Image (cartoon, rainbow, N blue to C red):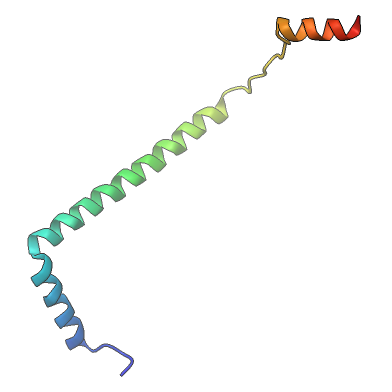
Length: 78
């Protein structure tokens, strides 16, 4: 009672084929394959991009206060 026999699977496959048709299922599988290929391509592009950024020297940011900040700090000191 708990397991499905081969006849159950055959009936399920036939019902699916009747509902969707053979062409529709092949279209869906083709679209799924394209999606998987695009996903893998995106991952490989991300890996090469991260490898490029790792090879570059780290960049430093020099912080200089803006003129308005300098004026405020000068007022506080005075």
